[in-house]
Amino acid sequence: MVVKVFDLVPSTPAGVPMAAGVAAWLPFARAAAIGWMPVANLPMPVAPTNKNKHQDELIILNVSGRRFQTWRNTLDRYPDTLLGSSEKEFFFNEETREYFFDRDPDVFRSILNFYRTGKLHYPRYECISAYDEELAFFGIIPEIISDCCYEEYKDRKRENTERLMDDLEDNKDSKLPNMTFRETMWRAFENPHTSTMALVFYYVTGFFIAISVITNVVETVPCGSTPNQRDIPCGERYTEAFFCMDTACVMIFTVEYLMRLFAAPSRYRFMRSVMSIIDVVAILPYYIGLVMTNNEDVSGAFVTLRVFRVFRIFKFSRHSQGLRILGYTLKSCASELGFLLFSLTMAIIIFATVMFYAEKGSSSSKFTSIPASFWYTIVTMTTLG
Image (cartoon, rainbow, N blue to C red; front, side, top):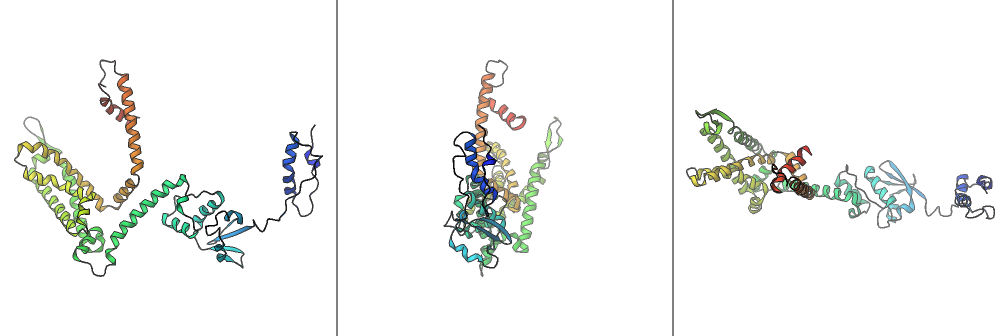
């Protein structure tokens, strides 16, 4: 038996919308269509009333001119926050009949979605400090940020904290009315733009860093050959010239290191810092070479130590804001990079083992062991793969 649903729907009373009446009948109509209950034997259901209107009224939130609408019960879910408590009444405007907040409307969109869905998200393109200030104003703790955004929020928070600490260390000396000579010197090293002399020394050291790196590269270029048809590097053919340039660079680096060591607020912490270790490693081969020039037993070790002169290129990080930002980024992503390297190592071991046992029976195989297969696996995964 087919029941015509629309013939059984009576006209709605005055003041009740047609959509509300139809919506009230729909569950019964669906039940009748599949044989749950006969429609004709039931009384007409009661239409929705407005008796709860005062409890769940639609309110307007004006945030710096941008209006947001939501139900009052939506905000009352979290009574410990500003919008969920009676404190929001202090922001109610009697003339416009709306709540006015002189806050950031872009961040407020995420805050209002928290009341609607119960999940707090971090908008990645917003300033982390401004986001924290908005959360604090509305009484929301950042620890409830959803898992999908919490890692990114934590990383941005850590980067911002490190930058603020560096800025505080850079600017704390400027607040002192009477600085000592050491404090003035350290401030000049860390912030060269504080004085003309500091800026000149900054560019002079940068120039010698560039000269040192270029010299280290050029001295390996062939500059002729011997009667035995052996190429002679420029470093061996023009030994005195390259030695003089290396000596001048090392003297500048040594003076800079000693001056920084003298002016450092904590010499122990300065000597343990990464940049201090780089400075020592960059100048140490020169002084070892002066002592071991005629010692044939350690000449091979000295040649190895000369490789560490390439670390002078890292001295550029003192002179580049971009390199320092890169350092902050690598430091904040240390756990993620560690997991990437771990995954890459596991893949190399697995595929190297497969290659070794796949070629084990071949007499012409070059994979004589699993470690011997590492190189092929690494090259394949990082280039061709």
